[in-house]
Amino acid sequence: NQAIDLAETIGWKRAINMVKNWLADIAVKQGNLKEAKPMLEECLRVAEENSDKCSIAFCKESMAFLENKNGNLQEAIRLANLAYENFISLGMLIEAEATRLFIETIK
Image (tube, rainbow, N blue to C red):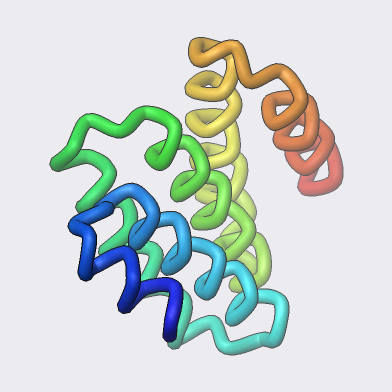
């Protein structure tokens, strides 16, 4: 992927991680759940290693989408709640509201 290659060239870890997160989101939407899971696990690991709270929130939200698609509803709710709390703490109210609405669709 050209975006990942360019970000790696300049050492922009956050951009690399966000692109991989988006690619995993696409994989989930396309039903490629086995492909998405390791990508999201790596994204979360890198975000946590870098204490990147914004990326952590997006990774957990994406993992919630994946778990929902896999039928693991309790895990989806747990992850979505963590993402919601992170978005709130960061003042990302639009993202928090979108996550809250997602949680409502699971219940």
